[in-house]
Length: 337
Image (cartoon, rainbow, N blue to C red; front, top):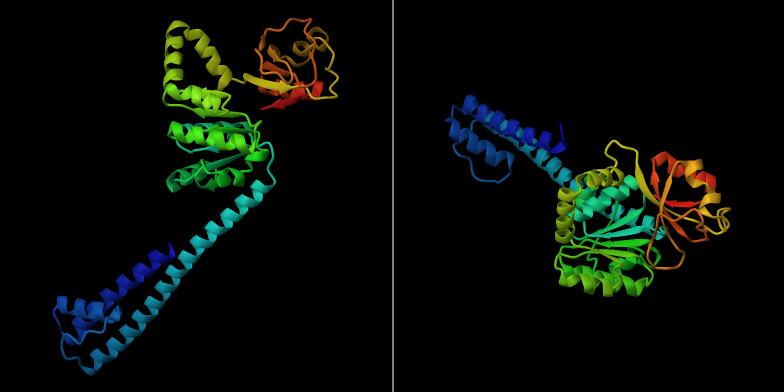
């Protein structure tokens, strides 16, 4: 039983005991006895309903003592709860800021609405560090229900001070998932000023906002209506392809994943061809694509065996989740899970 439930039961019991006591001692009607009991226990201080006998006055003094004691306990519990809640919030904010101070290469998720929570779920599943920026207390509570250790900054993501708190200058990526296109645009512009090289993805409700968001620095812009329409048409036209992609993208019972792997400096893969690297033979992963280091050019799809590997190249591979770890162990490749 909670402390407040106990206090409530205590007062209800006093009212009942007082009512029964006045009825038995003084022979009063039930309503008069209840009224006298409530005014006595609550220490309101009204005059007696009817003249009291000596026994009635003794009973009243006991009732006053118990009522005042109960009120003192109730106020103490209320004060303790208020202090506890406020202190808990302060401690949580301090822990959040301490955790963020040491973060680097993390992801910033602006907005914890429906799309933002999906992004949060994927980050949790991938085990990637992230910071959520949200100003709606209800949405913050929802995120904490999903993961009580989630790092959340309560504030406006469009403000420079808020993004600075999230260490945008050291972040590895940002997702602008706010409800308004104008807000997402402002987030991208502000984040680009803090970190010109920050990879950003933004949501756009209106098609005319897509170009603006890209000019603001968002490398990728997701339009729910456009993306949803394309997927629906694709599902009708090529249902088996969509089913396969669903298996690759999600973890729904099939250990098949698409991952990107960056070849670091010093790896023994540098200078080798794909044929010489023998990645499929040694790890079981299929190399689907390759993007050259330091370029934003087109992806090389299905690179041939004669393709040379260089430091900083990003490989797109597909295979079982356990195979990705084998690739890391075999090639000393940085794999971005």
